[in-house]
Image (cartoon, rainbow, N blue to C red; front, side):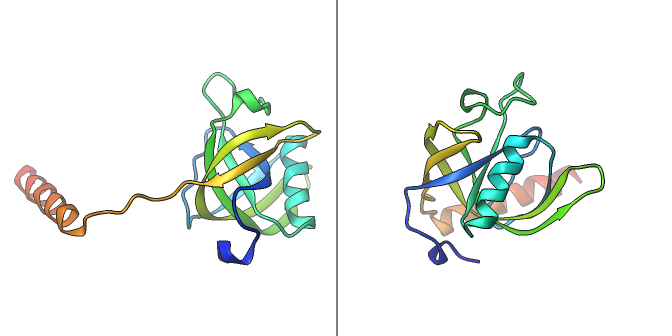
Length: 143
């Protein structure tokens, strides 16, 4: 899966709000959904073959699925598989593709938002290699 297979950004995507979970781009992870709003967001993404953004819930707002209870950054990705569990929960296999920024949340029965990509800053590889080598030397000294 690649972002180029989908519509251009910024775009409107369903939002899955997750407690105590933070994902990274290119990470594949199961998500266990029991909240009706999250299940509806996942169903919309599957039915329309669209991407979804998974955003972590802010501390002290666990269990809430409102726009002000989630962080405005998350991971944009696709739902690869969906399984209905015997206890009523839904298990989806999520593949992260890129970091995303929630511009604004749209009203509705579940969370949907205007989302744009967070562009990665370019890295000076020579400087990064030097920093990593210093770090390795410090770790060796501690051993």
